[in-house]
Image 1 (cartoon, rainbow, N blue to C red):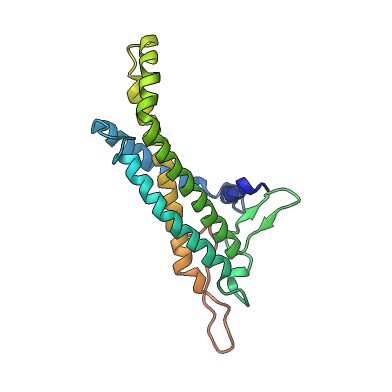
Image 2: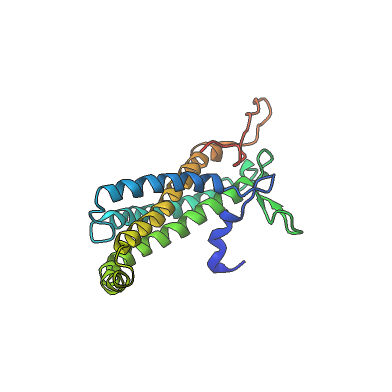
Length: 215
């Protein structure tokens, strides 16, 4: 696996039936993004990419979240290394890498959460950097492209189409990030403390599988 694409391991995870695990999250993010984009358009798209605008403000949030994601990744990778149930293979609702190949592997909970937070770190970097570029070049790109497009097809409001499309795609990724973050918080707040039962202690009923955990 390439060093530059290792953070995308999370989207390679499949369920026991072979379905992509991230798709339900992406569907929810799609609905949220569509709703916000429509409301933003109806509001007249007052400031989409400029300074102190929608994308600029949310980009600042992703920058702050990046530090939290890195801390979460370090924590889950190093906590409870000895006799930890985090290193047990997920049995209920398994998370599978390389589904249907000779390299198929069922992940432990530690591997699963590490892949989750690694994905969040990479996604937050992408969103933060893209927000900076959009703020810096939005005005220049608009001045260069929109007049030419309007000359070709004057009846189409290309400026609005490009702006709302950009808002939709960026909000889609941001919404997906928030949904995965909530899933990660669930694991950090609950499953990280679930240890193997000891003598005289009633075993805790576990339902750790990522595919049966509510969003």
